[in-house]
Length: 198
Image (cartoon, rainbow, N blue to C red):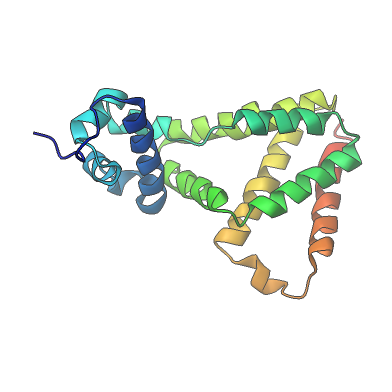
């Protein structure tokens, strides 16, 4: 007997995606330890055995639910790499300010908090944010010490998201106009792209 919703066929790719979507939400809200496969299955509207069928274990499901860069995001990074550093810095800053208050940023921060108790999950996030996203950009720009610059840029991106989501930093600069925010962030990122690290 299953607890799935009527009409949903066992084993479909739709069910697999619904399980992943439910897992991302619940891991972000409750953390790894307090989230159970049964909770995820209930939210997805499937039998818990189907979640295990697709992902083998809660640990594997957590790994699969980690945020990964989309093809669109990777393509955008390639476009940024074609720009001179000052223009690339401004484009990155604009994208950061547009995204920090989005539900996507909130979900990513939640997953980061959930991953903090699992070293292998932390390593996976580091691989995603630095090796797969920031490092290729720095390499494409032809900058020296690309890995170190990639780490610094990752700190800025995740730090801005954290400040907006957790500390509500907008309350500290209510009168700072959007253009001023953009200018300050652009100058900071431009330093990462242009400072001599040799």
